[in-house]
Amino acid sequence: MSEDSGQSPEPPAGPAIGVDEWVARSAERVQGRSGPVGSAARAFARVPHWALFVIGVVVAFLVPTITSNDYVLRVGVVTLIYALLALGLNVSVGLAGLLDLGYVAYYGVGAYGYAMLSSSQFGVHWPTWASLPLVLLIALLVGAFLALPSRRLVGDYLAIVTLFFGEIFYTVATQGYHVPVFTIHGTHNFTGGPNGIANVDPFRLFGHQLTSNRAYFYFALVCVVVVFALLHFANQSRTGRAWRALRDDPLAAEVMSMPVARLKVLALSVGACIGALAGTINAASIQGAFPDDYGTPVLITIYAVVILGGAASLTGAVAGAIVLNVLLEVLRTPDHARWILYVAVLVALVAKLRPLNRLVTVLAGTAIFGVVLHLIVGAVWPRGTQGLIPTGSDSFGHGGWLGWGLRHWLVLPANTYASGQNTVFNYLFVLLIGLVLVLTLLKGWQRVALLIPTIWLASLVWETVLAEQGTGPTRFLLLGAILVVLMASRPQGLFGTHRVEIV
Image (cartoon, rainbow, N blue to C red; front, side, top):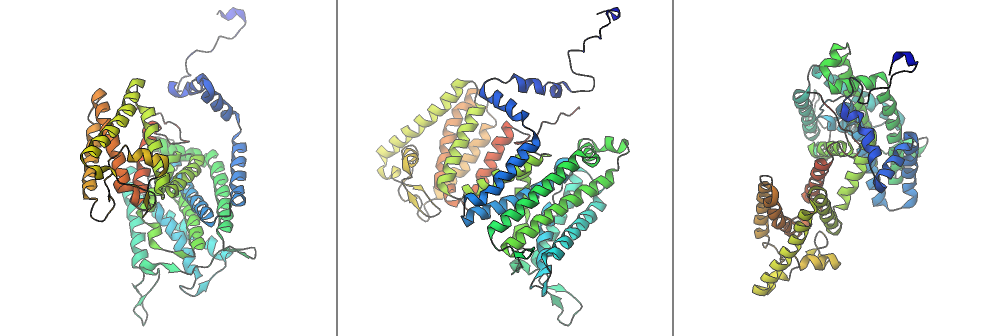
C-alpha cells in the first residue's frame, strides 16, 4: 500500500522480531481446538485468576464441614503441609532455578526449633506467638548462611553442597542425644536422638489451644493462602522477574547488572522460612519432632510434588500436593490401588499407541493371551488356577467382578501367598524388569508383540508380589510409574508451561 493513501501499513503476518514462533502461536493452537475440550479450555481461560483462587479457598474451607472423619482431616493437614513445602521449594527451584537438595533440612529446623522452645525437652514452654516467629527467623538466617558459600555455585555444584547440608542435619538430629558439653555430666541430649522429641506443646492462638485435626486443618489452610498470595505478589514484582531471569540465564542476568548473589541468598532464605513454617505445623499437630520425618525420602516426595504440579507454578505446587498425597493414601488399600494401576495402564496405552489398530491389537492380544494361558494351565494343573487375589494387607478373597476377571485371566496357584511360596514370583519380577528394558530397545510391531506378555506379566507380579505391600514400597513404586507416564505425556507438569530455549 502506498504512503500517499493516508493509511498505516498492515502489520506483518508472522511473529514479531525477538518473539519465538512456537510461543507466539500458542494462543492460536488453543483457539484452534475443537469439540468439548476446546470449548472448556477457552471458557476456563476467560475466568479471572482471582476468581479461581477464591473458589479454591472456599472449597477448601468447606472440607471440614463435609466430613468429620478424623483420618480424612489428618490427610488434609498433611496435604496442606506438603503444599507449604512445595510453595517454599518453588521459590528456589521453580522461580530462581536453584537446585536445593537440602530443603528438607529447613522443614526439620522448623520442627525441632519449635519442639525445643515449646516442650519439656529443656523445660521451656514458650507461647506460640513468641516461639513461632523466632523459629522462622532462625530458619531465615540458616537459609542465608547456607546460601553465602553457595552464592557462586550453580547446577550440580549447588546441589551437592545443599545435599550435604541436608544429610548433616539428619545426622545431627539422630545423633544429638549425646552431644559433648562443658558440664559435669559430660554430654547432653539436645534432639532426643532416634526417638526424637515428644510431648511438644500444641499451638495456642488468641486464647484457644489447637488440639484437633480440624483446627490444624484451618490453621494450615490459612498459612497456605497467605503464603500463596505473598508469593504471587512477589512473583509479579521486580524481585520475581529477577528470579526468573536468574533461572533462565544466570550469566545474562549478571551481565544486565542484576545482583545474582543477593538474589540467590534471598531465594534460599525465603524458601527456608516457608519450609520451617511447615515444620512447626507438623511438630505441633503430631506433638513431636522425629528425625525420620525429615529425611531424604521426604525430600524426594516434595520434589515429586513440585514436578507433578509444574515448576514455577504456585497453583501447580498446591495441586501437586493434593494429587500426590491423596494418591499415596488411596494406594494403601489393594482394591483402590488395583483400580488405579489398571486405569493408569489403560490411559497410557490409549495416549501412546498409534495408530488405532496397534491399540486394539495390544488390548485384544493381552486379553486373549491371559485367557488362553489360564485355560492351558488349568487343564494341565487344576490347582494352578485356584488362587485368590489380595483384598487387604493380610486378607485375600474373590475381589468382586474385577477380581473374578483377574482370577480367570491370570495364573494364580492355590496358596500363592503362603509363606515360602512367593519365590517364583520374585523371579518373575526380575523377568518383568528385563522385559521392560528390552521394550526400550525395540520399535514398531516388535515392540507391540512384546508389549502383550509384558502387560500380562506386570499384572501377575502386581497381584502376587506388590499388592500386599501397599503400605510400604509398592505405593511409591506405583506412584513413580504414574509420574513417569505423566512426564512422558506432559513434561511440564499439570500446570507448568513449556520452556523454549535458544541453543
